[in-house]
Amino acid sequence: MRFLIADDMYTNRLRIITLLKSMGFTCDEAVDGQDAIDKIIASEYDIVLLDIEMPVMNGFETVRYIRENLEGNKKRIPVIIISSHCSLNYFKGHDSYDYNGILTKPFTKQKLETTLKKVMGTI
Image (cartoon, rainbow, N blue to C red):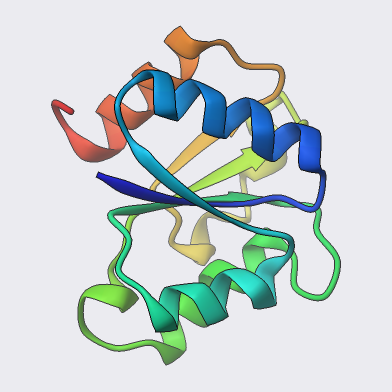
């Protein structure tokens, strides 16, 4: 499986990529939402992890763009939102963005695996 990790902080991308590679996955990275969209258009990914708070386009704007403007499989790509907002109440009202899962920081390998299984089924 090939993942795209979009986060403006290098250390956050490195942490996620290190965990995913230890699970046998391939990863690319993007530094903001627009960079993520450009990479999704240019390549094929099985899943995208988007930080909520990024410059240029935040995670919610990015997933909305994907759902409304891309076509075919790219439009339906599974998206996991990454957030430091731990309260699920924060996400009420954001459900309309049509993301597939939430991964809250800080997270462990087990928390990442659990979120991936919920979104992708058995991986």
